[in-house]
Length: 404
Image: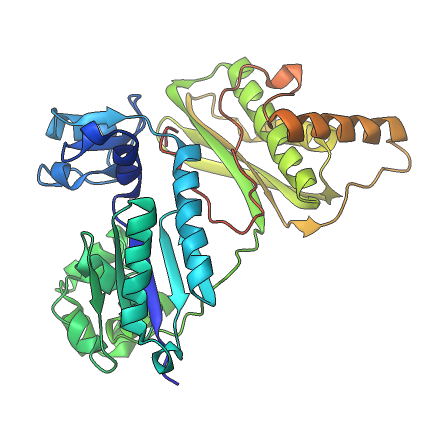
């Protein structure tokens, strides 16, 4: 049985969602992302791309390149609802699928040629998504994830493409090397210095040369350029860590503001752990200074999900890490080494009253929202909540209204 992998991608997803909500935005240049000086473009319509705009660029640059564009802050909760609608259709249609991101899916159609014809069935899924959600969508179909993903990119906008078995290498050959997954900006720069601009050139290079230049990553690049990939579908993403970050609109050394943000992060992440019956065994704090130099510090702890353990530890790590007395651009908190289990009372330090307090606080949050109850030390930190369950197997969404 030959493998058949379908890659589905919702075109300019955030933009498409906004246009469904407001038809006046149709065919107009549209930018979705952060509105502040440090905001970035989370999504841009095709009408803006001829001006050189692309996702990930600073919003102020995009506005300068395309001043007539409409700029929208965006709403993560709205996008998740649209994404969930598409997810439900795919879940009903295929036996195994992977949700790689909020707008990107893989599905295993291997063996379905005997019953439907994989390309015909994939086309029917696409038409159903178009009909029931109104969202433009493209897909690529081939024998593996890498070639299918590239095919989707070539099919856009709002189209579909199939690469027949045995033609993967021929399909990839004329394409630019940046279209190959795993070739980022830094890797492309090194390949360019070697005279490599197309995938065909990589196909002709000795494997040993790429391994010498890039190590194990060189082997991955070479294999993918040949159209070879055996990456499995991951139906469920088991989170090994959870984290949150905040970039300030203006660099600061205001210790009250910094500590308020860190305390709110630590408290909210601890609640997320307890809600999913998880505990963390390692805490880390990140600081990015105004010169973009970034530092992290971590500490192993006995497994816990208790605020009164984690919040003081976050403060301790920040105090020991912040030693440059320089303006801070970003702070972040990360809990890793996550395992399943309930918070256990410390025989010598805790009591039943404290455990009951956590249970009462979490019941309030479960009913009225995660930001409905917080410590006084965390008040004033805005939009720290995640807006979803990080342990539900869904990939994290880029919050378009957050400054990155």
